[in-house]
Image (tube, rainbow, N blue to C red; front, side, top):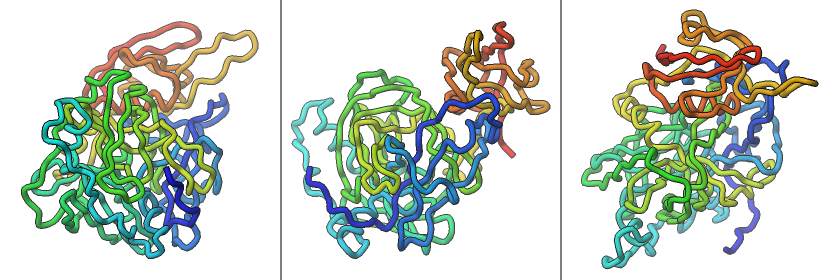
Length: 426
């Protein structure tokens, strides 16, 4: 692969470090919150006015004013993040437009005789349903990807792809056939990094076929389609490397944390892929590509795929998409508690892995179940809880009013109770 020259992009996607173990004295940053200061976000690139900044809501510092540089081996959002993504490619062409990147790829012609289940067949089916999304505002510009979910222009993408448009920005959708249309944002959900937009004056589009992420297995082949670095209609392949991987992509300016139980894949996902499709070999949508692990330095300009990418499971966000389409506020399941990672064992003590309760809300389902401050939640149904992010991601995979079995440890004794999850609806 030819390496592009190191020129500054118009913006860069956010970057963060994996959660660090919590000490016993670290206070919770909010319900189900990991310890403070475990998230680092790249600063705005010079020349850009600024970078954009639960089941149980997590509260922590906003996206602005955090550490200016982050450690190598950080995680990077795979899309625009408001001012990044494929804008990198545009900056290299000198005019911020992406040059030829806006021209539909001609390599998408597929042999009609390609066998079922082949990458060629999957590409032919899915490419018409994947779009490039360009966002421009006074704060910067960038681009990402999206997935067509209705013939009249409803499109699913990531919140961080379109968040710049929240303050008067413009959104343009570039379709696979070379046409484009303006779009409006119908709704966003920062907690799951989900957004729904609607393209204007279009019809006869090809909606993607919705699959079931719950049917995925580790080792299964998958295909990622999107617009990495503005190169629309790009197809990459890989396997499902892991399922239910807790991914914490940080917080927005309101302090809401984005944590989800991701589908991990080694299919190449790069800045600009965010909001694009992860599909199985039947061409069914199983996830929305959202983030990557990267070895890039603090400025994130060299961020790229190292074979560890993450997609939001389609099963988790299906109900949320329906709410956003209707202009409703997204709702999430919650316990009504604040937690941190369980502390490490002291001398002579046996450690318990899980999420330690720091505060229990009055009237919450956790209070009714008998949970107390200091309890360590170790399991939800069959899901092993390894820390605060693990608990958030697990609970977020359920819906309000779902019944779950919760297990916790208190002073070395195990407890179990059936609970009905609360809703965070205001």
